[in-house]
Amino acid sequence: MHAYLLTHYGSGGLQHGTAPEQPPASGEVTIRLEAIAVNPLDWKIRNGWLAQMIPLALPGVIGSEGSGTILEVGPDVVDFAVGDRVAGFIDSGAFAEIAVTRAARLVRLPAGLSMAQAAALPTAAEAATRMLTLLRPEEASTVVVNGAAGAVGSMVTQLLARDGHRVIGTASAANHDYVRSLGATPISYGPDLVDDLRRQADSGIDAGYDTTGHGFIDRVAELVDPHRVVTIADFEAGAQGAIVAGGDPTQLSINDGVREVIDLAAAGGIRVEVETTYPFDALAEALSFSERGHLRGKVIVAGYDRSPAEISLA
Ligand SMILES: NC(=O)c1ccc[n+]([C@@H]2O[C@H](COP(=O)([O-])OP(=O)(O)OC[C@H]3O[C@@H](n4cnc5c(N)ncnc54)[C@H](OP(=O)(O)O)[C@@H]3O)[C@@H](O)[C@H]2O)c1
Image 1 (cartoon, rainbow, N blue to C red):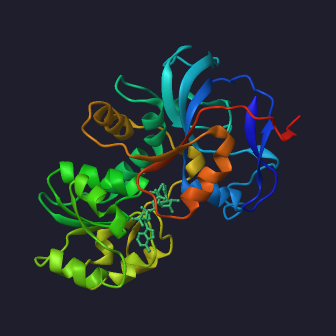
Image 2 (spheres, rainbow, N blue to C red):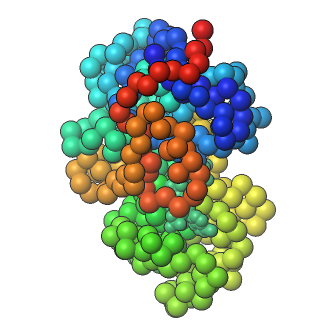
C-alpha cells in the first residue's frame, strides 16, 4: 500500500513510499482511509520534538487521525462490521491508504457527515470535551477561548456558546468573521489583548480555555484567575495553578462526549470547518501549512493520485 514514511526526524523527513499491510489483531480493525486530518501532533512528531514521549522505529508510518471504510474485522470485535463508515484515532499511522487500529478508538459515522468532516472531528471533539469536563463554567458565564479559530478552539467555542455562555475568542483579524460565526466575540491576541479583553468583559471573566499557549495565561492573569484556566498547549502552566489537560495521544479513545459532538455535527448543530484539502501526494505540504500555525478549522488530506512511491518499507 502507499504510505508516507518518516525516514528521519526533521522537516524533510517524510517520504512517499510503500509499506506492507498488517492483519488486524484481536480488538482491531483494518480501514481503507478516505480522509486524513493533519494535527499539530503530526508535525511535532515529524520534527522529533516528541521522540522521548512517543518513541518510534524509523522508517515508520505516522499520522494520528482519519476516516474511511472498514475492510476487515479482527477477532473479538463486536461493535463494527466490514463496510462500516468510521472515523477515529489511528494506531498504525494515518498517512497511508490502509490502516489498522483498535476498535475502541473509532466511531461509526452517522449520516450527514462527509469523510473530510468526519476526519476533522475526533481529536478536536476529544480535546474540547476534555477541557469542558475539567472546567465547566457556572450558568451564563463570560469566558475566553484562546485560539478560537483553530481546530480545538472552534470546537470549544461552539460548545460553550451552545451552552449559553458569553464567549470571547482570540484570533488573528482574518479569522474574526469566522469566530463570530461560531457564536463568539472576536478579539486579537496581539499587543492589545488585555485592553480588548477588559473592554469586552467589564463584569469579569469566569473561565479561560487556552487551546494554543503563546504565554496567554500569564498575559491575562490580571483578568482571569489562572486557577480558572484550562490549557491543552501550555504544559508549564500547572505551576501558576492552571489546569493542564494533558493526555497520551497514543491512548486517546472515543467516549460518549466525543460521540455526542459527532452526532451534533452530523445534525448540523456544530460547524465543521475544513480550511483546505490537499491530495495525498501533497501530504508533506499539508503538514507545512498546519505548522505555520494560523489555521481556521482543519487541514485535510484526501484523494490518492498514486504517483510513484520513492521508497519502500519491506
Ligand atoms: N493535550 C492534548 O490532548 C491536545 C489535543 C489536541 C491538540 N493539542 C495541542 O493544542 C494546540 C492547538 O491544536 P489545534 O489542532 O487546535 O491547532 P490549530 O488548528 O493549528 O490552531 C492553532 C491556532 O493558534 C492560533 N494562534 C497562532 N498564534 C497565536 C498566538 N500568538 N496567540 C494565540 N493564538 C494563536 C491560530 O489563530 P489564527 O489562525 O487566528 O492566527 C490558530 O487558529 C496544538 O499545540 C496541539 O498540539 C493538545
